[in-house]
Length: 253
Image (cartoon, rainbow, N blue to C red):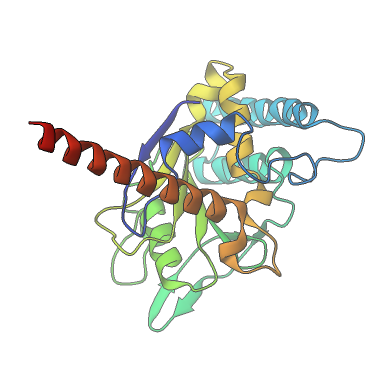
């Protein structure tokens, strides 16, 4: 799977590379067909294959719309909504009014699982880090990713969220440091443009709505959070072994 990521070992760190590989290889916890809400009578690979065909059709519509000069914002919003709802299992995705915490406004356009998962969509090709007026708070502009990260940091009930401009999709987590963000980014343009099915399968396994938990459960109980903690613990053990080895080497010298 072609992923661009920033890995941090602080509180805001995301999934480590070895855990991303475990997820892609179905070696992480909570990855049965039932865990992914696969309908009875179907196997996990069947559901991913069906979702792949749906996602390809959504992206073809996006490409055709871009070629015809259709409204970029509406086109991208329709694509991301279709990709999440019809291919990645986000049946709870709904439009939302801006949220207000204190005196700050957060114009997040979509949420899934109630208020659990914020979804921010930028116009196609605008990029996720470009400040735009529609994501601002009345005093300054924000980028799509900036809005997502600030909302996650301000909300007690949202740990994970998604930002996309149609060509890239970024999975982000609540993170105290705005200057050192933690995220996983997926190149959608390349996946669909080059028909990279294995990459899509890994994306599906990582970002399916079931990975964000259920509305009645604590945010920390979702599979994404469980995987993150397992990766952090594995990293701590690995670093501990490295320190022991380094100490022994110094004693030998």
